[in-house]
Figure 1 (cartoon, rainbow, N blue to C red):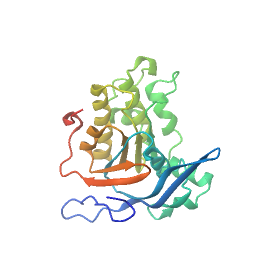
Figure 2: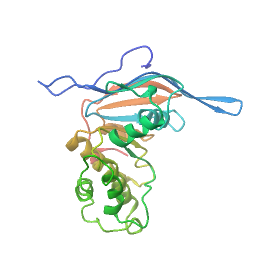
Figure 3: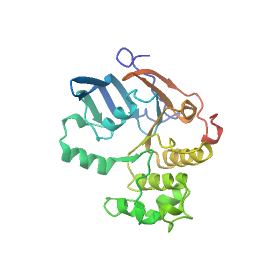
Figure 4: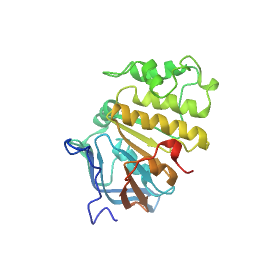
Length: 253
């Protein structure tokens, strides 16, 4: 189903509750990078919504445009054309200072590489965010939420890759963001470790109600989503709802 020609399916709200509200509303998003004399079309007129509290997987091969789309939603990049609304605010009208404030207040990011500071403990890495946030969790609370409460005083070099990624997730969610955007969070991990990381992300979504989007090229991960958005050649190729969400431990890798 092409994004530009028809409305994608929307996630159902629980029975008896109000309809889910759109957190993001993107329309006609185009992104063109100029590489010398060559124009690279990363996104080609993308329409997309993300809804309150849902878990979305953006699925597609490398170079399909999914990271560019996530970066635009997160205020790390701006589109060449089109509009992106975060709730009732038009992000495409913001300057750099306003986008920085938006990222600081509303968005948590998790990337493939953990970007922890080697000389700081897990607790201290998370505290870098909590000390400058308005209404943060304590570092201990954030680390316990992702199953790292027993490793508070360990340095990154003393942690496995999966443990470092869970510290990175704790750091991202410690400021209580409205949205968690994850770009290939299991890309550098083995299957068993990746499941532990996905468990942590799923728990944040379920327990905190954080709208969560995960980018991956691994189709197996799509089983844990409310919706799966397939991206190809800078376009939304298909959007489908999962009738039943799988736990990370149920995924067939």
